[in-house]
Length: 450
Ligand code: LLP
Figure 1: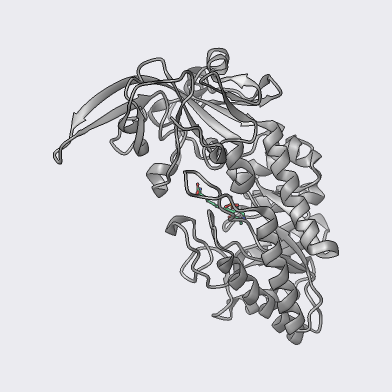
Figure 2: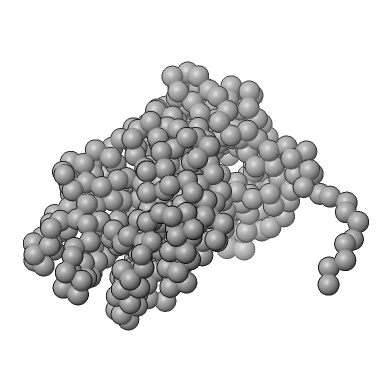
């Protein structure tokens, strides 16, 4: 069975038939920390943080803004500390994500708050903490942020999120900048102009620029370029109307990564060089000073750093109507720790992690342990025919939207996340316990509510 380095974290290798990550053997990690287990390659994470920052700096020079790591893809206090030490910023889109950043002592001047329906409490916590920017997403929010900033006696720097009408080439659920979408202000309908004028008129808001995020898991530069072109046109119109230029442009995240053979992870340098030349050309065309450009990669940093380790529990063979056999291999996790295959039809690679097999490979379906036929991790994959109970299966590229979208379906405790580095391993997010889950149940006397 082939080890596909391109979908595993940088410090992953096969040694004597066993998957070793960050110098730690899979079998020992499973023994020490249990399964399912998220194994995050700390050095890889830090390397990717740096490569996005240096690509932005290299291609935008003095106009390089901030790389805001999209914490929704995966965050924990320890990871927030890595991000903070690397000097990049963080994008949070809920009070919870903000709380993690603050618990890690993240510099508020490098925090940006997102969300299409931020609560007043979330806005209040963000302003109280002194976050650098709030990205305003709706008309109601303009008034809310202004009012709360006034309460605190501050002028809050804001961006407005625009929808440039781009159909990103990705799954419908993760495409976010076409017209018929819940996010942001439409440019083509004039809503964006209206929002900008509303913000301009309010004393406790400082409009620094505009933002867009076209979607996620995108491989072509075309969508980013179309979006940037429309945003820069908007900047020019804003200048003509208000006699001042908006100094900031935030182009969101969305850079795709390889999950399976044949895919190529978006190279930060290629991504930034294409966008930088387009931004410079378009600004020259409209006689605009090039704004500072920020980006918000999430998946591109977190996804490739992490591998999920499962233990096989049961197998069965099914005779197919069309002839042949499908082998089901069931592991001890599934849709509660990785909802992406069920939600988006996402594809993953897999590897027998604990030993070499000389058995022939047969068509297999890797499934979880949940009570749903749709609890499939990989629909169709050739795996050694002797895989059986006790074997370890590694699924690479699970660092983004895996643990962060995990649930307790079937009352499954969410797995631990262990950081590996140079032959050492440490828990950075502990495994939930049955006690954690049971502690939410209460027996309360009824109260009169009427
Ligand atoms: N900025 C904003 C405003 C976003 O909404 C997102 C992702 C990002 C940045 C980061 O995008 P990334 O670089 O990670 O593609 N759960 C889905 C992805 C949802 C993305 C939501 N927003 C998945 O598992 O594919």
